[in-house]
Length: 258
Image (cartoon, rainbow, N blue to C red):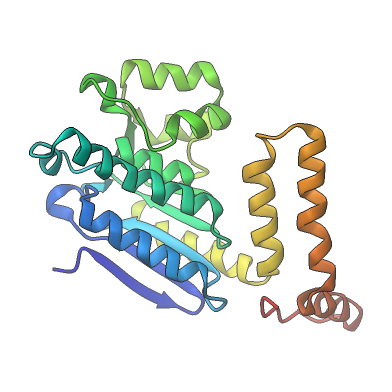
């Protein structure tokens, strides 16, 4: 069985974690496959949006594969953990927006991966938790960096310290997810968002994603410099010329990422 399914739909890449028997837990092999797929996609102009989801009825992703970890040495455990961190950093920096479709369990490293996606759509049965504190571990794939920025330090500490389970409705209130919809509507919503994104400039989307993700960690002056560095090159692109021309010709622009 292929543990990572890939399907292209008119500029959208659907990536499905396909280990339903293990709640789509990230084994080393699956993590490597996912990273390779994302890295290859980042180089493609024809893929404008990535949608990430989990197979089966029970989980988006239950995090790191603990059964695999059980027989690993400390160094091997660290290597397994860094695979998830590498994926999350890549999602954070890749030019295409990544939309997570979350149902059922979204735990530990799976929760961390969802946080690094650009947009999150959950079904009402989704449950979020960081169980690491009950295992003597630590959410080391970046959640302690991004979650406080999303929901505030106190709320993030509460989730980390207690390992409590957060249902979808509360996740929406906290700002962990942007939409909660019936499970059968998740993909339709993602494709609707993708269609809207596809009507905009891919170079502009990539630049503003980078600015939003990185700017909050910079001083104002450094953020202003990055803002100019990202904005100015766009004015010399064919897409910028096409956007201006389409505006005056009162038509929809055709952007090519050039």
